[in-house]
Image (tube, rainbow, N blue to C red):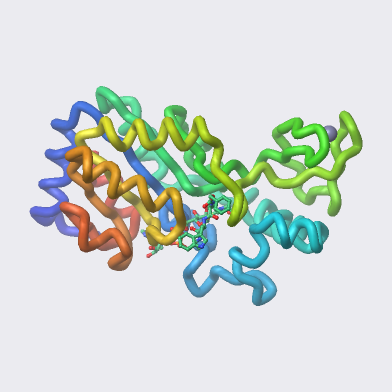
Length: 242
Ligand code: BV8
Ligand code: ZN
């Protein structure tokens, strides 16, 4: 159990007195739900790294392999539940005067925990998009047909996810920068800060005067520049911040 050290106390009072709070999460918040992170030891699948498979080139070259990977992740995720950190952020949404959650995760656990004011920067593993007519649909089939096709036009479906080398949705990105530029407090939970442009959100928050709090097991690329670094598991620390 984490003792109520002065850093947690300061984080709590900063959040309680904030007019606007923006939260950025990464794979680390879902680690406590048993979801493998990207760059941890469990970040491999059949000794591929995410960066090798989550690309349009990989999908072009071998759509079956890429769908096998996503199918494996969907099967793994189908049994996972939100943890206390996800639920705490959903509660914070209801309390803070002005709140926005930005997640890099595609696992859908924030929505499952009740978060609504949320931007999914990198898409949603439970949605598919047609490579031909671009229709986007919810799809929770587990397992998926190995090469799923569009019911409307028969085109090959792809995960509705932003791959490396692909641009993020303009509107989602604009909303996210707006949220970090207008908040008093930014809380960053469970991200290594290595993926761009998501990694630009923290510096932007700081430039606009936000008090930045980081929750992470380890030190990260952000640590030297944040106001408070709370080291520990997200499921233990995030509930203490409310
Ligand atoms: C783009 C969907 C414009 C896939 C993802 C060189 C320099 C700078 C940038 C680049 C570069 N080379 C290439 C780029 C651009 C590239 C990029 O940033 N690459 C990185 C690897 C250097 N970015 C892009 O391509 C982006 N697009 O730039 O568009 C453009 C357009 C055209 C041409 C060129 C450029 C698109 C990026 C989106 C990629 N898609 N996800 C999928 O999921 O299938 S990113 C992927 O990484 C996930 O979304 C994940 O969320 C995200 C970030 O990783 P983290 O969440 O931080 O996870 P990680 O494992 O790294 O860290 C976990 C952390 O949790 C750790 O710190 C750990 O300590 C902590 N932790 C663990 N357990 C716990 C915990 N903390 C608390 N409690 C615990 N229990
Ligand atoms: Zn179609």
